[in-house]
Image (cartoon, rainbow, N blue to C red; front, side, top):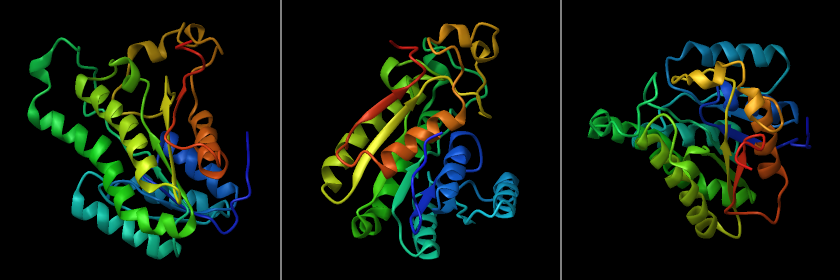
Length: 253
């Protein structure tokens, strides 16, 4: 596990109550950062995790809100910045597949406008809204943004056509924001492969006996693997911006 000195640093993690987001919250907080954890309002796991982490002596606060809703997203980010006393790192991790079972790419009728818009609102509009709202605070601190895309953004596969398109869009949004917010703010992105974590959409192959065997490193990705890359982009990588790193254990080699 890599580490860094994040004393006096302030971090907002969206979608931070489970999976990659929660692992990122824990890693940053254990490195000394004060972390605001965003998840949907009313999600009982948000308060559960806040209590657990505080009992471990970590400096965390709740930042409930819906990143896919323009007004609520702006309110949430501004409140988090106020509560943190500024912002050094924005981790745009919130995302949704919008379905509990993968939708075949050929089933175009299953992806109607309502489904498409929901995916785009959370997975693409959300990171943009968060970044736009946090931009001035991040410029003041010389901070960094890290986005969570997916290997689906490269391959065009995944839980649905809409999901793959949203993650491809996020990869290009990363490039555009990197140019637009330079030189004060660095913007990078990770593209996870298989992740062993709670997720709305379960893929049969993830739980198959040979799942790890298909990965050159012989392990299905754990949330902590991805959190380490988040830390690298946020706290290190001072001459890197606009990049997306495929983190898949070598599956696409």
